[in-house]
Image (cartoon, rainbow, N blue to C red; front, side, top):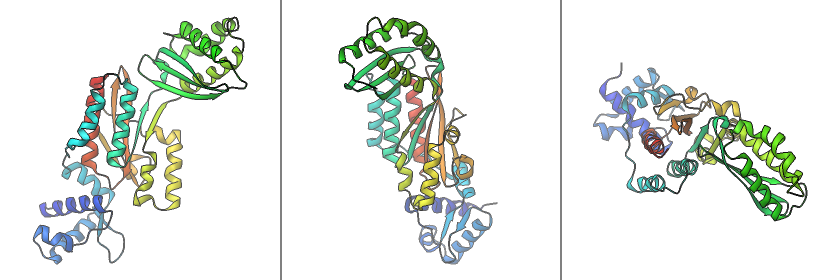
Length: 331
């Protein structure tokens, strides 16, 4: 059982450690709580014995344990208001009617990462329930094109493709025109079949180097149609945290970010904003994942923020709740 003063001491230690990343000693708490150093040390010892605090070194102060962070989040954390400057940045996105949903999500993630200095990610379901709305083949050089696929659910994907030989710009334009005329409105999971059996026999009548362009688009489209949509922002931010100064820790977390199996564990399963600390995250013992599920145009997506266990919990929760509400309104 934790007494009221011990709750306040735990709250102060968590919040101080979040700010400084340095263990908190009893002297820094005496003035705040108007208690003797011995009294504070005794309370800290009790909190340590109960598993809420840890000691890194014999002579050091205490830091929160995973159990301590969980108690803080469940019982002591206070929501933090979004600053006027940060609110303005977010409102600019949600009031911009020219931004499609995909762009609004990406820009929201950029702002979260910039403000918090953590990593953010959005995970969408596979695109099989989307219909193709538009295809673009944009020439960069005579040997390179960017294939852009846009769906009716507001998902936009692009892939740069190197052609096996030079192609005339006019043929690229003609191919785009044919693809749009024959594919728009087709369910994503039916496009490959339509490309192979309906478009390929026809396109050769209009485009000289049709095989080069057809193969380029087929490759780009197949990549888009079969993958889960995973968009990262601030991926390197996690590496700036003191907890990841060790080379082995850096390699470990980077490999996990690249693992599809691990990334899928970030997917939200709850409509509320939920906090998963350390082992609870199923990502890494040294991180916290704060995530939520949102529904946009009938499609479920997950937005998550990944940072050290020493995370500004109240700030991130408030931002995610605000972004979730506004994205769902925009969708």
